[in-house]
Length: 142
Length: 142
DNA sequence: GCTTGGCATGTTATCTTATAACGTATATCG
DNA sequence: CGATATACGTTATAAGATAACATGCCAAGC
Ligand SMILES: [Zn+2]
Ligand SMILES: [Zn+2]
Ligand SMILES: [Zn+2]
Ligand SMILES: [Zn+2]
Image (cartoon, rainbow over all chains, first blue to last red; front, side):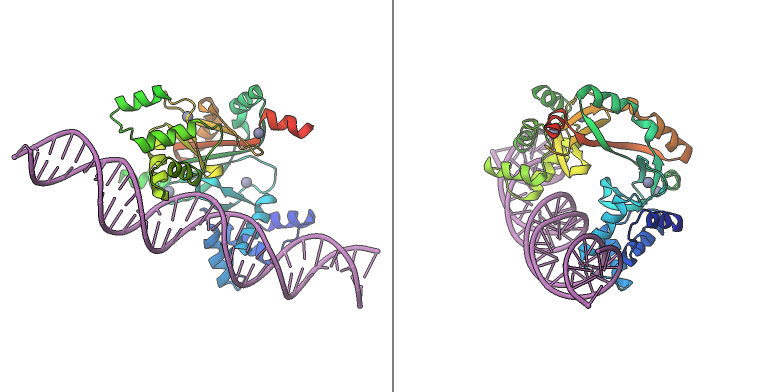
């Protein structure tokens, strides 16, 4: 995470205490956190306690590729590959809510073809798979 | 839509007036409608006017493959291919909110591979592309 | 034909998620 | 130092979703 931060600094981004704290909070979890859950922890840490505080920091992190929004959950995760500009794909466990991030880039062939045929210009793609993580799949069998 | 309805009947599903009305409302639009927008139209048509009325009908339609939820928009569209069990992919115009549905099935190769490697069992996949439809892309140039 | 059980509908109340609007503080630059 | 831009903080409210409970409907079983 330190490296991501360093790169952000180089790009002239202002990595303020709230923003750093939110990224730390996200990075400590392997699951997606809702904005209000993050807000609770900000409050505990002495930051502002109203929704815009959390949402603004999250907007910053998402805009700059340091975090992603999980549409399926209305929640957020730290980016697992903050280096490059990538198209993320997520695997969300419906039991324990853990979220794993993969790169989806090679995935887009078929959809791209349809879009091109339809004259649709894709700017952003959301790929979110829901299912069972290995641990919870084991639990199910037991 | 009549055909979809007939098939639903055959499966022993109860196609009640509210449910039919909601499907009609969705089918009349090529964009996604929020639950409260649907609720407004139900009210106008003399149905119940409280949120659960809309949400329950939508749950029914989504569960039975007659409509889809667009996670990106927290909204709903009628299914364009109600025949088969398909994995839908959506192209959402960020300007006019129109939603086009494509079949995503051949798309999943890469993600499937990653999931298998990780031991993750995929049960459902959300694919939503955001961008510009042909009409709005033209408008941008002008 | 009446009863009973399951399902759908309807309502009230409440919860969660998100943003608008405004004032204050802090940083950056001439 | 003063001007300007960006970030932070608060209040208030919008938008999306569900819990809990009462009522109505219909079809199966007596
Ligand atoms: Zn990422
Ligand atoms: Zn799990
Ligand atoms: Zn469909
Ligand atoms: Zn458009």
